[in-house]
Length: 200
Ligand code: MN3
Image (tube, rainbow, N blue to C red; front, side, top):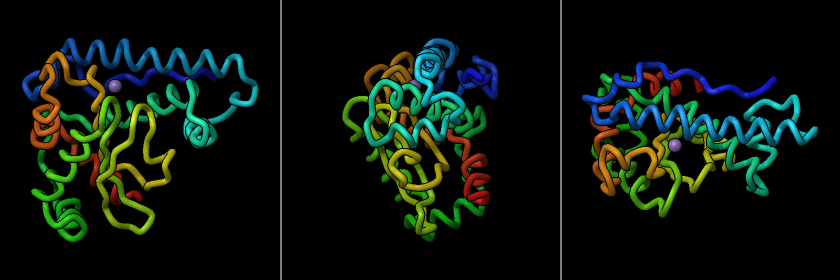
């Protein structure tokens, strides 16, 4: 069974007022994410050892020797999460997640500073993450290119932010720090993150 591009959980124009325009979402979801899915399916078709494996299994199986299969599988995995992490009414941190941020990361402002530092110091393409680690504590982390906390074993993802240029160039040009701040304050779906925390 081939991998498929999941539909966005909102219309492509839904986030425009919150800082992510329709053209960004049309290109990012319809072209970039689709290209990862198409490439991954091409590799699976030609490699019997990948057939019948779940996406998680392919990411984990290829993480030690990252090449084109890992890159495209990782990017498919990452973008599935990313779309769930965006909301037109984002930015509000609900109580249970806020309490966990206070106890593990020293408060919301320190969390946002740490996340912004991770997202802006990821040189070149990559991702920033809020995870609940194997020790049960929240942590902010970053990965290059298509890698992710599933591949690195750093824990269960609560929030994912794409910092590839294709994610922000139409809306923020070269200003990655502004894109990250806007995500944290207006786009981040912290309700989704809290649900992931409670399920972890
Ligand atoms: Mn992307």
